[in-house]
Amino acid sequence: TPYVYIPETLSILVTLLWVVGFTNAFNFIDGLDGLSSGLATISSLSLLAVALQFPDRGAAILLLVALAGASLGFLRHNYSPAKIIMGDSGAYMLGYVLAAVSILGALKIPATFTVVAPVLVLALPVLNITQVTLRRISRGVSPAVAGNDHLHDILRVRSGSKNIAVIVLWIAALGL
Image 1 (cartoon, rainbow, N blue to C red):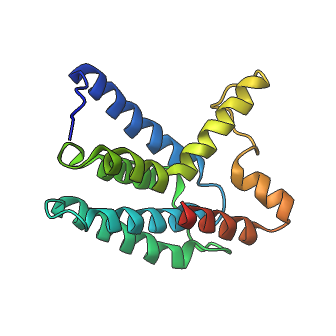
Image 2: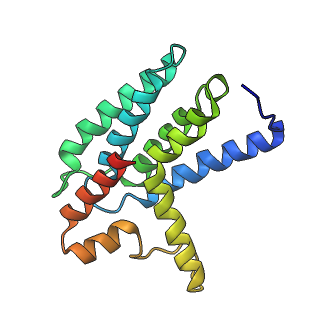
């Protein structure tokens, strides 16, 4: 198998961009009761299925099992109507752990699994932050300003239901 050499500086920059970007992307998707905790459960179980295929992924497997269990347990109290919410710090923590675990052991497996699997599993928050950022910039508004133009907001308005929007996005995440 031919190897592609990536300069260390570029590798570090891409890794930092992925971790910081995905951490923020996961916070952006936390807008409806149960959405981010459900996505964290789905994402961690999906990444776990990939990690279980490699014998040297013990740390990733342990983190993913713990994250899946914590997210699923939290979802019980966070689904609509939410009795508790995770807030920014909870969403940042989930996003950071998912981003970090998705790159654990990246040098030891084929590039297909290193890049494609995490990108597909974690695509929904990335798609959301990308479309929000582009939409706000095109309107001349700062991407950091709060708004109701997230994927979950659009689905909520079109479906007329918060719960339908959450379930549709869960199904999309499962499909990816």
